[in-house]
Length: 312
Image 1 (tube, one colour):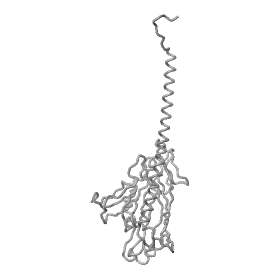
Image 2: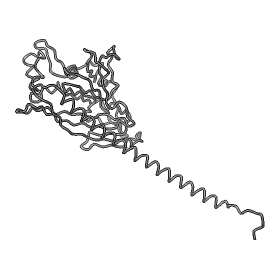
Image 3: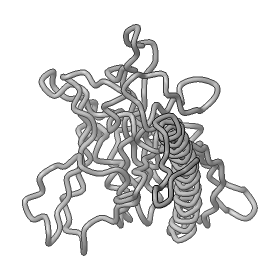
Image 4: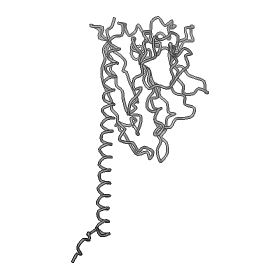
């Protein structure tokens, strides 16, 4: 019989069960919240990649549409080639002068980090340039930015851009960019990386090569004329930093009747974080590498589209 005026308390066992229940509840709520955050981050990363991809397709298409009329073989004219080199240019990609329009640079000095070693079996795109005749686009790929998943050879210098503008009067080359857009009606960005010597018998229609000390370096020099402003950089800032991992422009074709010039293009856009693997038949994100713990930030997509320009 309980004495009058006394209060009944909890036993030690009851307190233990209460604490255990609260602990399990808190752990469950924490796991659910973490899962919800991961799903949100993953969805946001996918949405960002898709949104930027659509914006890029629209911008590429608008730049090509705004480019001045020109015949494809006309890209080779006026370059002071000797007859042999002029013939090389006209034969490039069935007469399109493709090197004055598009180039992507590849290297085997990029290795995939893995627990069981590195994979040296494939050449990876590390940058490129696309010259529409109105604007030029210059990009560095995500392969040279993701140091967690891709290892760079110490001798590899990569791609840099040299330009002159009111904010950059010294014309120092920089490789701190992902995708630049510059006004370039003369296709200087594509021409600057080619051997285009005008001396008879010495001109070459190929990519410039650097000395051994600058092995792997390609510099796009557009500093011969000042720009009205800094180049516009797409993908400059984002909560989920993204980059182009590959971009290909097929040799353009000209419709004989309408003189329209048609381009077919594709690019792979992905987050820099995570193990983005595009060197297999399937493009996917992998968390196999032990240092990658933010798999929810990884998103990848491939975009295929066509563009049209007026021909003269």
